[in-house]
Length: 465
Image (cartoon, rainbow, N blue to C red):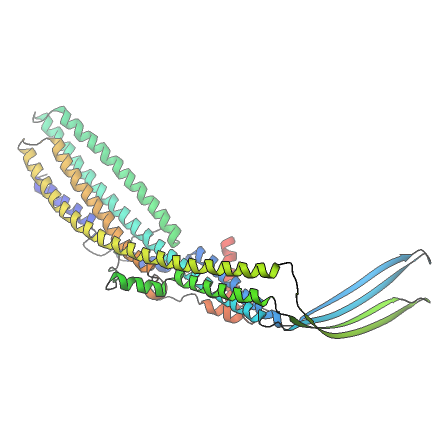
């Protein structure tokens, strides 16, 4: 094999590392396919949807405070008397109802607090959706990168094998010493070890992909064009403050904490209740036999705590402290989101610069490798020089694979930091979970569960099985 044939092989090797050329094979799974599968099969999303359903019920529970509560009871007792030395039975039936007529705003505040909690939980679900999709992106890029690393190591193993064979031929004709042959053999063993390590990393990446997406990967297509960045870092940070679910969740938590302060203050207000009841009792008469008696009662009651040992005042102070904590959490969350945007933005710029530098390094390393090969054939270079030049080219190509995967991931990390890594914004073209459907079905506290809730129950039952 001539030097030019080997250089052609190295050029092919470089193309594999850079990830250019033809698109993936027909039927290859795209990044969009992986994102759709992750969204549809995420147990974490199902879990947080169930958490949101539970939060919806808090609104329904708060709404019931101004509704009547009706209870009934049946009783049957046996009593032994020493006077008559006999057992006597007593039966009773009671139907009672009670209702809060007016509580000076406490119930409405509880309803409003529950609604704010529901909205905060919805934004928490959106944060989980972003995490799920970002994990799928990372898994997709890791599998592609690991696959390219395996191809790179396989090509390197072939080239080093040819170098080892050439070294043996040159040794036989007396051009080099046995040391050169030994060096080539050692480098060959190192290449096999590197290939085994790359294959192991590929298997690890496939398992991570299965966990993030819901199925093991097949052939993966080329990633789509990089997402478009905003015009400036400041514009990206403004978008993040308006759209990031962590910021929006913290805002809702502050609103809920403000309502909690008002609710704690309202505990000092009186409560107006109404009661009604019916009772029926069958019991022994004093003169013998049994008699039946019944009755009914209706009344209203106005009550208020005049002194509770400081409990109400303590609850009010606690609510104010929790409100202050929620405000600080909002400020801290906003700063963290702005920092995350800046970090992702910087990572994109730095990675772009690294890619340009590595591409220049690859071109220089390829030329150096060709020159060292020519000089080795003329006896001006040793086998070690050739192998070192090949290793430098291999390292640069491996770095480029990692950097290109990091660039793809950094763009999606920027989307996540801006709060835009969602199924809706990515326009994946699939039906998405509607968080308001279950809320609208249960906010009035119906006696039956919602259709959407029953569907999610079936999903969770399948997961448990």
